[in-house]
Length: 253
Ligand code: UDP
Ligand code: MN
Image 1 (spheres, rainbow, N blue to C red):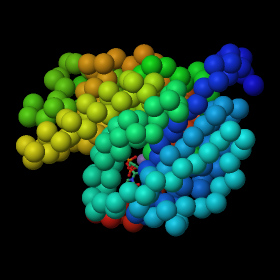
Image 2 (tube, helix red, strand yellow):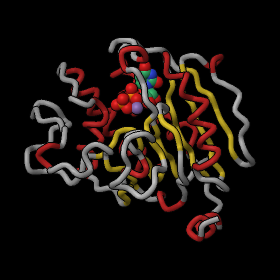
Image 3 (cartoon, helix red, strand yellow):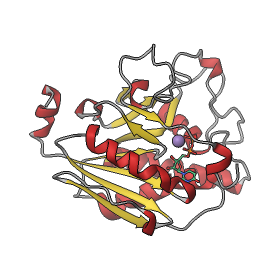
């Protein structure tokens, strides 16, 4: 076990991890969980919370010692944008209703992904963001922030530190609760005004991180483009998207 893991391990931590698989995205669950068993917080207590509209289709995955999976049934939604955005509210309520006293940190990860290298205690922090794999080396004016002032996700030209990935974020329960509550409220207010931010909850996450700086910034090693996409700029692919046919997996692509 790496030194940093053995030091954090003395704190007897529990890492809650939420993942969502609705509609055709249930196909990604097996590789996600099996690869997590190999690479993600190995040696720690890890509790996965899998939200799905089809609990019956969740595959049997053998979990290691101190690792568990709770499947939570959720209503299916038609628009992929709604499924993606709804994660903020689901995570907000999970922290309020289930995680208090049960976990120390929580991460929210996309399911159309796999782990390829170790992801351990070096990723822990009060508030954790990941640099987006396509925009980490782009100039600020190319960041795909929401640019319409009518949206609460609005970030004016010239502002913003990084463009963060919506596919992976985390931190302590208190900080992630504040993040998810704020993003959920802002998504709702935008919806009432009939405006949907350009990248939905990712846009609101980026606004939140502008005003509430992450205490830890993870490199794109922690959310790479894909295992077959050139990884020259990074040292090791730890976690990456798996290829998907958007038109086929999304109900309304
Ligand atoms: N998602 C889902 N079913 C859908 C669409 C999205 O379960 O039909 C969830 C899933 O966890 C996925 C996340 O929402 O990883 C983000 O959506 P997606 O991966 O399609 O967005 P992208 O990473 O392509 O921007
Ligand atoms: Mn994804």
